[in-house]
Length: 373
Image (cartoon, rainbow, N blue to C red):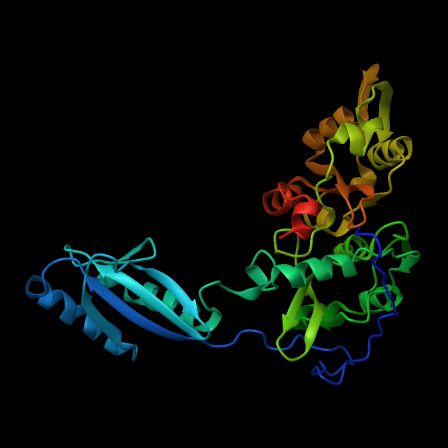
C-alpha cells in the first residue's frame, strides 16, 4: 500500500441511499448502468457493385425487416472493417463477400442467419462495443477509478463478522462511506437468510475487499465495484460464484511462494490415519501461520460434505504445499494461497471448478499489476 494514504471508514448502514431506489425492504437497488447506443451499419462491397446487385438487395431486405438502415460502399484502400464506438454511437463496418455472406468483426453470417445477426446487433445497441458492464475486466471503471477502489478496499476489517444474514454481515463491515452498497433483486431476497453453523466469522485480519468476498461467498454471493455517471461508486451484491466476474476472493501472491509463504515449501513429518480432512487443512494453516477460510456454500452446491471427509497418508516427510495438492486432486478441492489487498496471505478452500474459474480470471494478475492498470 502506498505510503501516506489515509483511509476513513464508516460503518455501512443498510437503509437505502436517497439516490437509489429501494427494493421495498429497505435495501437499495443497483441503478440502471447501461445506456442504449445507436448502431450505424456500413457494408463494404468486395466485388464490383454491378456483380453484387442481387446480394445487396437481399441484405437490404433482411435489415429492413428489423428496421435497421444500412449503407453500402465500395471497398477502397484504407477503408477497414471493424467496430468503433464514439460516445453513444457504435459504428459497425462489415464486408460483403463474393459468396454473398457478410463478415463483421470476425463473424460470418449468411442470409439464413438473420435471427443470429439481429441478436448480435441488439446486444451492441444495448451494451456498446465493450459489452455488458458486469462482464468487463474492470467492470466499466477507468484505470484511475479501479486503482482508487483497490485502495479503498485495502483497509482492515479489524473484527469478526456475524453470519446471521448478509444484511447483518454488511452492517458490521467497516466499508468506506464513499462506496454505497446496492443489491441485485436475487441477492436482496437472500439478504436476511441465515447461514447454518457458526454465527460469526473472524475475518478481522483481512482487508475489506477480500474479507467482504469471503463473507459473501458463505451466502453464495459476491460483489462488483461499479460506477454510475451521476451517483458515484458503489458495490453491487449479487448471487453467483467465482465464475461470475466478481471481485476476487484474494489475489495471486506478488512474490514467489518461497517468499510469500516459505513454511509452505518446507517438508514436515506427515502421518494421517483416517484423519478429518477439514482438521488437516486448518492444521496446515496453523503451521504456516496463515488465516484459513472455507467456501462452504460452493462445496455444498458441488455435493462435497467437507465435514464428513477423511483422509490418510502413510508416514513420511512432505511439504504442506504438496500435501494440499494431494488433497485437492483426491477430493475435488481447490485449496490455494491467496493474498488480500494489503498483502496478507491466506488459505482459501473451495471446489476445483471454482478455483479454475478464479485462475482463468485472476490467476495471472498480481495485485500490483491490478493497481497499475
